[in-house]
Amino acid sequence: MTMFRRMKSSAKALRCIAHVLLTALAAPAIAATPAKPALPSAQAIPLPLNPIVGEGQRLCSTKTASGLGTLNLKPASAAKPAKADFVLVNYIGYLAASGVTFDQGMQAAFPVDGVIPGFSEGLQLMAKGSTWRFCVPSALGYGAQESGPIPANSDLVFQVELLEFKTAAEIEAMRAAQGAQTVAPPSQP
Image (cartoon, rainbow, N blue to C red; front, side, top):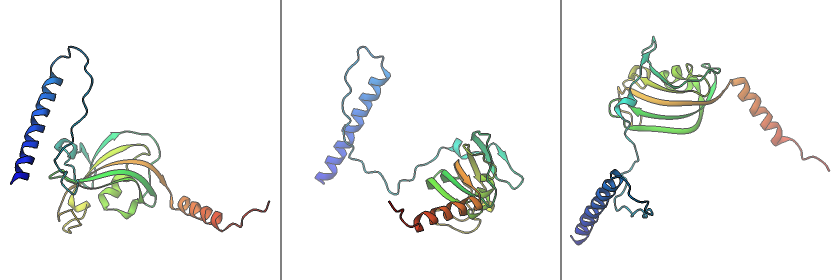
């Protein structure tokens, strides 16, 4: 019981300090005062860490013929990947209904045709260097199948930044060149 009282009083003290700080920040500054160091928080971060994405960031402005929703967040005018290409992307995926994040990746590499249909279709709309939002209806996602943290019949949203893409031939040439370097005998002095 003593531990609970300490935690309760610590939380109350932190709320009071937060209130004082917010009030001070809202008031006009009279004189510059040195910043005080932050106090440690006694509140644990709930696991798994899944941020909730706001409602406005779960919406798209246009739809393709297949029903994929799109919104171009950062336009670019470069080449676009084809279905047989490989991409390098930064992405975040979240549930359209709740905004709960279920996946994210930085510099993730995969084949364009190796992902769910809605994601694959969206990748082919992107120019290198652009950032898009895809609103993927369940029919273009996992459909009636549950997939890990994604419930069955879930509409999904992805924010995707296309960093780079290569054709299958370019990937094969890179692998061959890398293999030749590792097999080559050491040079003689």
